[in-house]
Length: 314
Image (cartoon, rainbow, N blue to C red; front, top):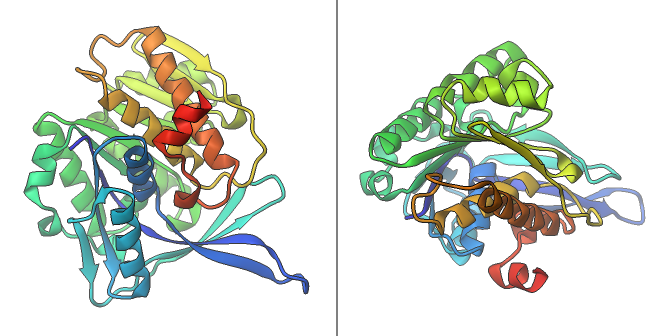
């Protein structure tokens, strides 16, 4: 298995416009950052699986079908008989930027237990990916960290996207403390430029990524929106420019970027070992292109490109 992601899968109620009376319209789109990444990578040829939990409801059944239709192994999608599938209302402004409101108190995804993870998935994983939404509540927090530690001990690369959502944390100080806790077991970190000060106490790309690398992180990626991505791989640093597009909305763009990058990395024997600057920048350019295609459309998973679309765009 190329990539095993653990974390939330949920329904994004995404604003698609307004009717003639000015009342907002919303579409029920599948989402959740780890699920998005698993789908993005699967659409681009990687073998992926998701470890998560949904409610015993229509949304939960729909999310399972979406994962399976997109080639994501859903054997570890547990069902909670008491908590509903988590919902997120996603409002999009005129620039395509998003605002999230979560209906998750606690929500099925946060109730994931350690004994609901098939041990063989962690043994099979070449990459174990997680985010910080599953770190906001127990028991999912402990379950997620244990899965990452176990996979790493079995030889997997561990990848992490903090994906900070302020309204899921009691306060910023708690969020920063808990989001930083896993850094010592992370091989590849993807953050946005807005998250850099939360993770490294600075907005400076060079010094911030150097501080993160000093914690043992082999590759740090800082997404810069339309400006592309800044990277630090050991002493190697640089910027790969973004791909211009007309913005539909930015929901799922970062997950598409990271999923596309990891799908490309999985094609390489040895993954990060011996990776050269041209090879790394080619992968990042590919990921930027995938993110641009997602950004030019609406929704997260529905907007993600297929391998055929990426090949046609080259």
